[in-house]
Amino acid sequence: MIEAELPLNEKARLVSLRNLNILDTPLEERFERITRMVCRALNVPIAGISLVDEARQWFKSIQGITVSETPRNIAFCSHAILKDELMVIPDATEDVRFVDNPLVTGDPNIRFYAGQPLSLSADIRLGTLCAIDRKARVLTPEEFETLRDLARMAESELAAVALSEEQIKLIQELDRAQREARIDALTRLWNRKGIEGLLHREYDFAVRKGFPIALVMIDFDDFKKINDTHGHPVGDEVLRGGSHMLLTALRSYDAVGRWGGDEFMIVMPGCTKEETALALERIQLEASRNPVLTSQGPIQITLSMGAACVMPKNGDTVEKLIQETDDELLKAKRNGKGRVEIAA
Amino acid sequence: MEEARIPENEQQRLAHLQNLHVLDTPVEERFERITRVLRRVLDVPIAAVSLIDDRRQWFKSIQGLESAETPRNISFCSHAILNDKTLVIPDTKLDPRFSNNPLVTGEPNVRFYAGHPLKIADNIRVGTLCVFGTKPRNLQPEDLQFLQDLALTTSNELKTSMLKTLFTQRG
Image 1 (cartoon, rainbow over the protein chains, first blue to last red):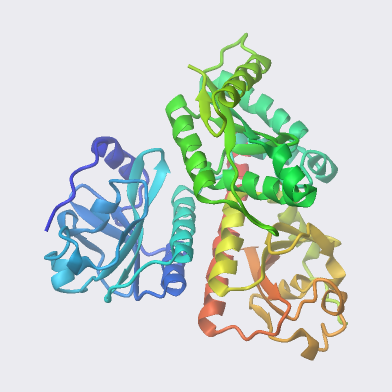
Image 2: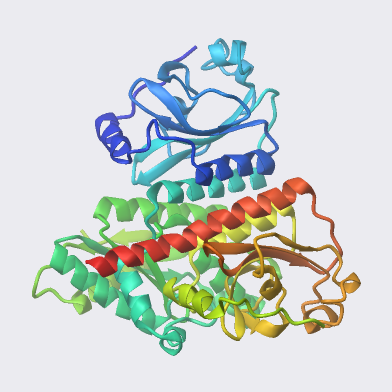
């Protein structure tokens, strides 16, 4: 058996976990629902939301077995939290890390494990949403996606905070007609007027609070060619599918808007340069792994991205930030497209 | 065709819906994720988060159909919000309430429907999480449980916006 090493940021991770005030709390239906859904969706007898504490793994929710915690050194989840990706063990008896693990050789006789790490902020993985079976099996691509989606729901429940204050305030102030005027009909994301208004608000908020803010501009590479080759209706499908894909890699309080044509803008309040870089890498990975499914089949897209991250002070302007971001986008285009450029 | 009656506490219900500040807002990943998972796991053509406004049904999220809203009086979901149970219609053509509903006799040719109400407070149901398709379908008990679980998760997402709003208003 091989024990998982400690994450590099273990101290910070434990602080985050303690701050959640969730360890050793009673059963809550909102988490029971999620583990129940994992059982049904992946067709497994055991599913859990596990939080990896200093010396133990504690289950906020567990279906299929009655146990509330196990020592950390035998927990599969302690391995899963070392990386960002979903960890799949098709057969624990064939994996040198787990073959003589007591949870495999004895109760509950784990053979298959799939665990998606749960994060509330970049690089801090608190635990996992996991699915366990007593027989060896594989995970289909659909099941993989579903487990990931359910894990995001679990994160949502853990955080219980969604849109940024400024997005909420903006939405509250607008009546129905004003909201409709700010939404792009094709993608149902913010339109230019909407995202620009939001950017000004988030920028002012950042100035007031001394927070950073990141701005990203994204361009679909060779979009004219897609339109010419497949026709405008399919081009529209590409814009819709591609822009919605952006959402999957962003936090719930980032905002996406259609700046115009095939250009999109992302406003990321409170986001540092490192966090921005991570998010944009994720988007590039998503784009390269997942061609947009259209009525004419899958179409591979690449995105050019320019980003600038600032800690704005009184006197700095939104216009300057937009210009900087645009310059980076131009750089990305010139340097080969399908890449990210971030202002130094 | 039978139109759903209006709930007795309709004014109160609409006030709660307005307070969610969710109508006519852009697409959000946290709801797209829900309809995506639902569609995939239940293997249905269309899944949606639908909100019942004064005169219309507005979709916060819808996968499998290009539609932003439909009139309230022909919507299935307006029936589903009348109580706490899942509304299940295995074959719309065999149900006198819906057999000559324009959404059945014409586009999008709804032949089966299942919708669980989104309840955000006692007796306040603002819409549904629903699935539908163009062929009759009998959903299994585990499927209905899944729909219900996901509907409650959806309600929580909606309530999160409301709670956040309350906190910001208090300053």
